[in-house]
Length: 198
Ligand code: GDP
Ligand code: FE
Ligand code: FE
Image 1 (cartoon, rainbow, N blue to C red):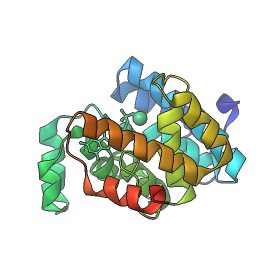
Image 2: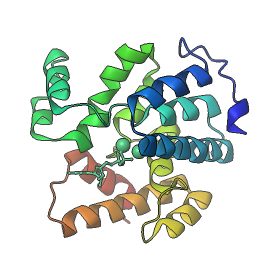
Image 3: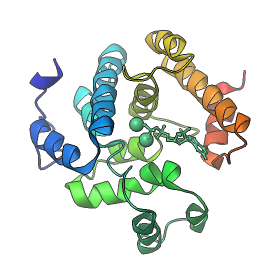
């Protein structure tokens, strides 16, 4: 049971219960429900594939922490941290992870690079993803609240192979973006080349 999960690793100055309250304050009710779904799916994958349940929980609870922040705040953060100027050409979809990790690091006092990196790339993937990053990327896609065409198949694949689940999700996300003629973030293409090409 998730509610019995106690954080032992001292990665945060908070217990799981305190972190839940902080996140709840920061996002809408609908998004909070999604976040809890991602935590549940992440913990299940961490157990199945032998990764840290505690890190999976923290990464999931914080992955969309910055999703409702203003564009101005992200632009300020990109400048303050002297991040790649190309980021200024993107939007919240890309910023809430790629830039959000710096906001989370400061606001939550979380400095674990493996968790921060998983949050950073949770939308796009990357060419070499840690097990934790794969778990978060997949859990975000298959959590119980998701109900798009193909989610059942994605859940089945996630039970068999993390790499195959990354490939399935990436190719479907790309198809979806291209159908709408939306811009593709370069890291998403790198994920495709690394995990999808046979
Ligand atoms: P969410 O935060 O739980 O909604 O999920 P994600 O963080 O995975 O995705 C946020 C949004 O970014 C979704 O609408 C994705 O389709 C979109 N997205 C994912 N990859 C890319 C990309 O390469 N380019 C663009 N423009 N959008 C993307
Ligand atoms: Fe997200
Ligand atoms: Fe999400």
